[in-house]
Image 1 (spheres, rainbow, N blue to C red):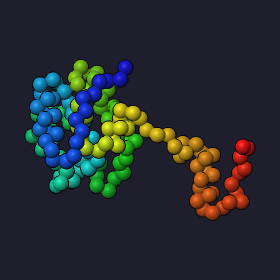
Image 2: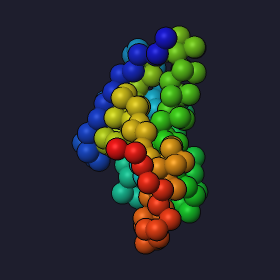
Image 3: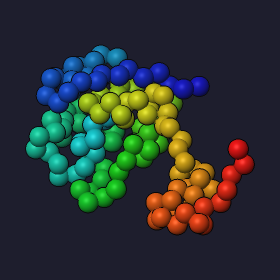
Image 4: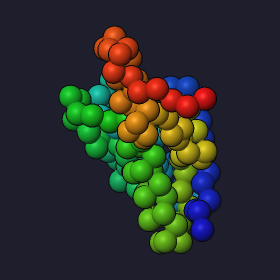
Length: 142
């Protein structure tokens, strides 16, 4: 069974963190970050990242998990956020997802589009096309 999520979504610096911290204390919840910049270590200026004291008051997930030159994408977010939500639910707590990256929220709640990268034949054809190797592209039946 999927864990139930409380989602607080909005732009930077509108007070989401303050509201979520208070709510989390009242309903025995933990917070899952859904801000694309807050996942990066050392990216504290301009991200409205919760302070260490706030993070100690209520457990936060997916903050400061990647070095600035490290790879992070929506698929990685979805996997880690889902795992965090499941873990929080197993401890009979509520997961509050808080952030301003709508793509992350959508991926978490609706899933990801599975495109041609998943189909090796389509990927191969697209690679040949991109390289201008038209004669190498296999013919497909109509």
